[in-house]
Amino acid sequence: MTARVLTDFVSGQRGDRPVPKRDFILEICNGRSVLDVGCVQHSWKMAVDNPRWLHGALREVASSCVGVDYLADDVDELRKRGYDIVYGNVLEDPPPGRFDRVVLGDILEHVEDPATLLSYVADALTDDGLAIITTPNPFYLGQLITIGARGAPTVNPEHVAFYDPITFTSLIERSPLELVEMRWLAPSFPALWDARSRVVRKIVSPAIHKVGSLLRSRRPYLNSDFVGVVRISRGDGPAAIADRAAGVARFHGVA
Image (cartoon, rainbow, N blue to C red):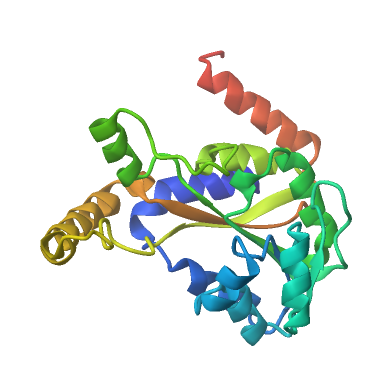
């Protein structure tokens, strides 16, 4: 299942327009019980002051919404403000129940033990539940331009790993989960939108964004983010292992 989703995603990606991240997540979570993993946006104040805080929006559309985060002081403050958020370390603690939907919004690349995280996700899902996992693509157009211009990429100091759709799929294959769907996500803002120069903001940035959109339409692998929708594995077992071994052999040119 997982390998087929990747094959379909890569082979059919030119026909699939990137979807807005927030809208995609909210639609899947609408009317469902939701666990939002890593829900605090850096600090409690930054979260509540942001009108686009994902957890706040999830509370509006879900039948119930629980957040979990390891920032204890921020969790306490948000609980005082009426949010159903619990303290938890996803690499050590069990999930606070089972849910129809589990959201990992740009969390995977922050975690040093992704296998344990994905096992946590599986334990948190109902039998027919879905998890929505978003992560940045290291091969996105802006990063390639940055490397060309500066000689090195821009890397968030909190990130410990990079996942593109191929390595992400390999990771899911080795977990208790399987892929149901993959989509490219629309860029949340155009390049240089916050530049000080009005000329850059009003003329240069829109021009770069237009060219970038054209390039991404022709080469979708230049998109900046993607999402994987996963569920508990239906248990392909030995067949899946054999398929993966055959794929590795083909990659290395072994008959």
